[in-house]
Amino acid sequence: MRRIKKLALGLFSCVCLLAATIGAQARAADTYPVILKAGSHGMLSDGTKSMELGKGSVDFNKAYEMVTPNEGYYLSGWNIGTKEYAVNASSFSVTKKTIMVAQYRKIINEAVYRVKHVNNYGEELATQQVIVTQKGANVIEEALDIKDHQVDQKYKSAVVADKGTEIIFVYTSTAEVPTTEGEVIEVEETIQLPGDTSVVSTTGSSGSSSTTSGSGQASSSTSSSSSGQSGTSSSTTSSDDATATSEEGTADLEDEDVPLGEGVVTDDEESKVAEVPDEDVPLGEMEEKEGTSKSWYIGVAAVVAGAILLTILVIYFMKKKKKIG
Image (cartoon, rainbow, N blue to C red; front, side):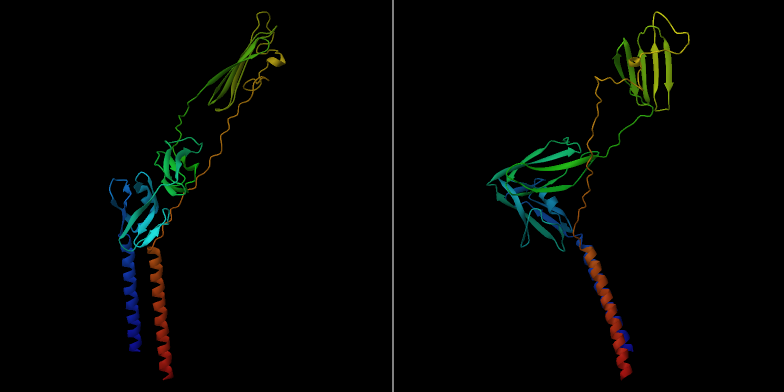
């Protein structure tokens, strides 16, 4: 029985030591530097030939933006250790200090592509770029940081065709539209009606009003109405130099002289409708990076579970053997 206890204690100690070692490696992964070197036919954005790109993982998108090829050359890929990687390869985590070197090729079949930054209505928010490279080359571009705007994707890539290649970043405004409580903006419009009658219509943010004046054969009237804080108000005045009706506040008007609603619409006027195109809702891009910490912790859990199961089986078979003996 003592031998069984010692064996179980030994297995448990090994499992704990293994778990501690793997955990230490997982924590240390984020401290491994990734060094970017410009190579023989280019420079880095800071004007040097070498810089620390980051720690713990290789980000090819970020590296692409840091490299500027010399005139007549284009970036064709990366060299990491003994392996070659494409320009737009997937990022990965590292477990030791890593050096990546930019690789270039000479431009033989020249082509250009454009980079645009627009809002949801297609209006340009920044000056577009025209870049010369090799036909068929893979290129990557990074979005700009524009105040009060959110971009659809941080990075975009394309394969450059003979002509017409564009990389377009679409930005959505995040700024709030300022409003002033109680502010009224009035628009006044005068409409001439048949029979020397005119209508002056005033429209504001709190409603609208209209005034009708003219001449008839025997009428004089004044009327007004209003409704609500954001409703409508109107007044109508008609006078004649000859005769007034016996009843105060009433008037007989010709059908064509009576304004309808808040204004008068004639056959000669066309309604103007402003169409606003639907806004495309950008989907935020989730940047996925392959991490190692999660997989290591899963491995630790699997090792611990296996060791516990093995310990239980050893104890079981030892007891069974003792009973048989």
